[in-house]
Image (tube, rainbow, N blue to C red; front, side):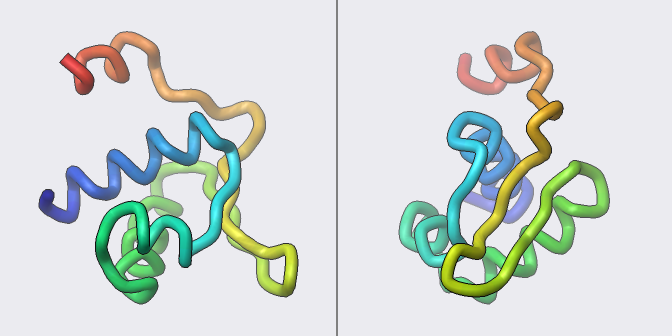
Amino acid sequence: MGPSERRRAILEHLCQKRFDTTKNLAELFGVCERTIRNDLVVLTCSYPIETSFGPYGGIRVANWFHLNPVSYTHLRA
């Protein structure tokens, strides 16, 4: 899986789950946490993704944001 595919998969995952941590995403995609943080920097330039720190910190996508169902099903096909 290349970087653009992984970033799209991260976005899909966050849209479904709404919240996760860099540690969980790194394990899920088989990359280091630094790679996930780099991916998030790229994604936050185009999508409403927020990060927070501390014991309850993580990554979340804005409640109002959802992927276009047409493009989402196209990617799954």
